[in-house]
Image (cartoon, rainbow, N blue to C red; front, side, top):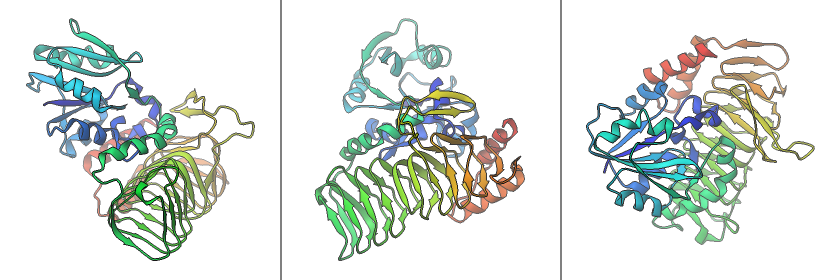
Length: 403
């Protein structure tokens, strides 16, 4: 079976995380959108269609780019921001004729054959039509914005447990004095450690702890919650429901209803709520964000200088990759921080900080010089045994030029 996961025009509402990756690489629940789709489709032949700036990065990861020159007789297309049901995937795989699947006026999937496959570039991805193709109207869950990811994360964590063969697996070291409440609702992977006086409370939701996770003493973890492989939870941390912590992150303080893409540090005291934080970020000691306005009203956010009313009461911080916040940084409700930002000096930030800003909260904002930024980025990634690729460097440089 040939599968193509595609990105559509909605990517602008996933800013700033979508600056450095296709939307289907964003995280929700236990997985990225892409990982979930591939788990359901169970195919090894997968192509990707995204915004042009990501082609070299995708290739550098060993993935296949979908293009008109690829000789295919049959292909299934799935929108990269869908949370597909097993029923929908099964239906797609049974279809043999040209068919489009529409949910709430959005194209969520398609099956194309022969010469119609090449029309995907001119008609399917942007016009959401293929001449002569049958249309089937269904009801499948799509995510339309970055704040919706945060809002729906707790539900998706619960749904994702069906991917686990044993949802109550405890292959690990759990020290005496650690308390697991409602153990049948807790999954702890191999080589993970839970130290004494920590409470993992799964009475109100599933708790997933991946492989090689370390949870130090006196932590409180409440489900639904996911802590992915290789992460560390520091002593006295409070991890609230609706939280997904991506791989190899180091987390302390209070974190609730928040998604961390991975490889990010927030090791000290401070509150992080109703937020989405990218990769390779660092949030300094005593830094916090607000996620509720004093008048309890709807929160608006500025995504790439376009204002959106989220129609949500709780919206925190959206921070792009490679951004850093010094000690005592205070983020207002609905703050958006681009990629490659260095904000320091203590105090309240503006609600929008453009990418590659060097912002002294007690002084002025300057452009973060790219050569200095990339030097730091390479040091940070090297500490985790990862090399910043030429394709990634080129992408970051292009973003810096247009910022």
